[in-house]
Length: 419
Image 1 (cartoon, one colour):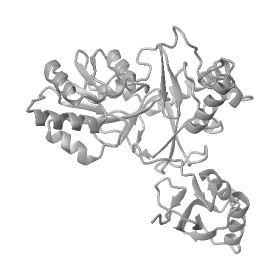
Image 2 (spheres, one colour):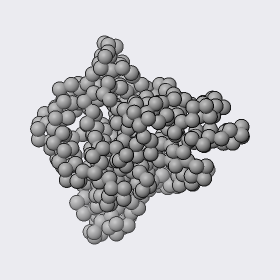
Image 3 (tube, one colour):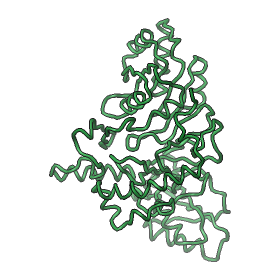
């Protein structure tokens, strides 16, 4: 049996990019015609001309908090309008078998397509194969995680035990009785199950592989599972767009899914960053039912150079590296990453900037550290004036050498003492 889910995983990068960019204009046009919210956001955009990453980068980014606000406003109208804020291209009925809710709340539709959330590829990469039983301990309550994994497993030809969360002793009993090939869920819950099985004196020899999501999966935990005979791999997915990337046996970053267009942008903006620079992960899934265009996940990541040693040729990312929304309250005023970017764009000689907030609460100090190729006379003073103009707050400026700021995606660093 092939070590790859399908031939798409080993396409040449050029062929993949050509296919994605060829599909992009139709997806934008579909969003404009079937999604009221995106028709408004993309008003005046010629979809046929959006056929490159440069063109895509000109379109607005919709971030999770904006999606929530638009949904809430739509429901507040009380006209029986689209509960999804006009983003869904399908309505209740045969084309939408399920609706889920994420914290916020944000409501997500599930469509009818086979492997709607595209999880089968990640499950396959984690070592599962058709004909196996999978113990699925992702929640089936409110959130889509349980259904995401179940539909992916079904599409791959696997049977699923709907374990869900909680009831640890019953989870151990089910694993003992049913002998599943592996587990899907959070790593912390599998650790609890394994520890409970040890406490009960119950062996679980069949559980030799796992696919994790929803939590950090540090090397220490990976090694703990290996010591207990379980090879665990992680995936990166969201309730809004489904699978984004997945881990392989090489354990060198996460490989992007084949049906998403991923950009890394400077936090608070829609501007793509250079390869290797940490920024916010923005996704355009090729999903006709829920055609989000440039959806800002709010998560930080970065592109890894080179290809996966397993032979998969798609781009790799480093994985989850923190949150991109670094909005900070300073002297009673909110300061956003986009405001820092607005300041930088006023000065062509400035490459990057990092706003460092220090001192104690109620005695905040702002220092904007900016990378510039030269400290032109009066540059610091002019940037300080721009800080006051944009943020309505006073701040100092420090000019630093190009490339000296940390590559961690932070635009605003809160270094205050909270004692």
